[in-house]
Length: 118
Image (cartoon, rainbow, N blue to C red; front, top):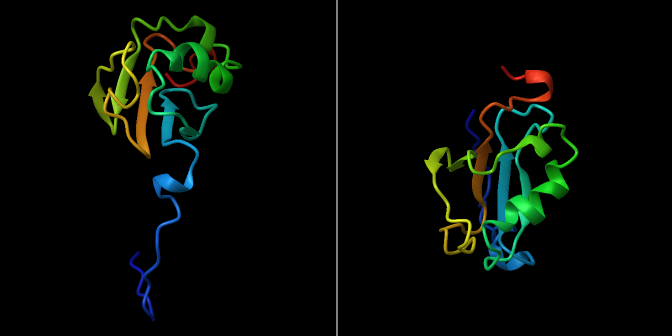
């Protein structure tokens, strides 16, 4: 459905990078319906990508029973819906991630509580 503005509709965007303590990164876990949408996290651009699995994601996904079963060497990553192979030793910025990017990860063999997604 389209929207027609009756008057000028010009204003600065409120979600600009400078309005946040760090760039926002959306992170979603595929095939896990307990989480309806990606989490949005302010993460410093110099954060090593590998720190997501060890320091960031346990705090948001760790209470899911599948999380402890993840084999991080087999995780499939997606950036903006496309398959993507990040370097865990490089920073978020060095992996090409910027403000408001969306990444998702799929964990082969893990499809929700008792396989609820399969």
